[in-house]
Length: 414
Image (cartoon, rainbow, N blue to C red; front, side, top):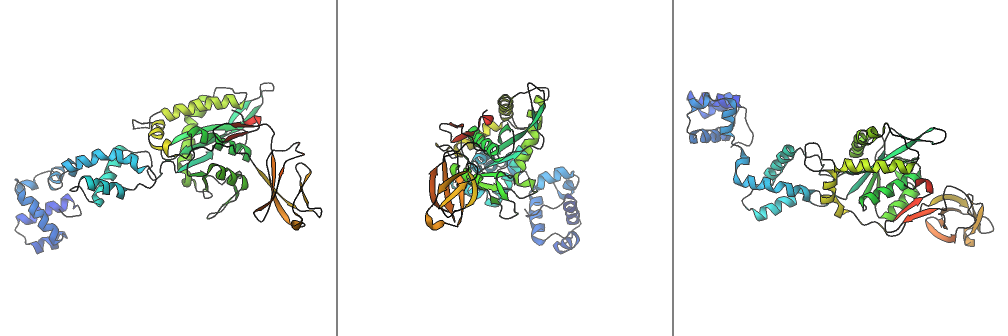
């Protein structure tokens, strides 16, 4: 048959001209059909038991089914379509392409379809299945995170005052497995704590974390090369992952997490409307129950859920969580005094550095336990932190063994 499907109107005109005894050249001029197309349609018509006059009396649908028989009815295509469900799972894995799957298919079925037809049949299969998992997102490749625009609320048990809280959402795009929790702020300690809890929920670490241009993760927004801040970079290094900030005002860069937020407005926010919560732990316990229910609910039009897709396609592709705990580190700049010391302003305490750095500007990175001093990215001194009395970094850091998760301050404990 011709590569391009012609309209039934043109085909009927071809049949009528053939009945009138028109030559091939005349038919080509009157219909615009090529010479090869005319020859191939004549072969089909001559092989059919009905005459040209009888074919003209058929409806467009009947004529179409004769000239273009359904290719899916061929046995080799039945076999191909039976292989597509398993190919779906393989395509979700990093590095697997349609070309690789076609080559495997041809090894087992040498007389099977060629690559272009393989892609066309797979496209038809996807359309017939109404596949909702976007397969260009590979399993274990990314975790997308965002904060909801609408806030949840806590109630003060004594005064009755309503306090708004943030709603954090994370999603694995391939399986669409989702995590959510409430936090007091979007500031760095709370943000990194939410990220840690999300990784614990997923039970592993993806190759990259896709985040908005939030201040807790980005120092300087840019369309091409945004600058990740120190704390976010430390977090990524500790968990052996990458951070990919989205472009400013480009929601399509993380469309799935935006969509997840909208779904959770219905499946989390709505059930909480008439409930009163007095503390964050109580609120987050309820949120996790509702999110678990959301993950176990089947996709619309499919017989599988986010939980099932995560277990079968994505869990084993995540990197293991680190055994050591991540501790938030703060940074500041200081000038080395003539006495070869720098002062950490938060504690009003001095720390020594080698004499050759006198008068130089250095960077101080400090946790609740240690102080590190850098000059041009080279560490020149390390001290145990002393004189600590107050500040953002709390002393009551709690680590969950075996997860690499550190809970920063009692207010974050779920």
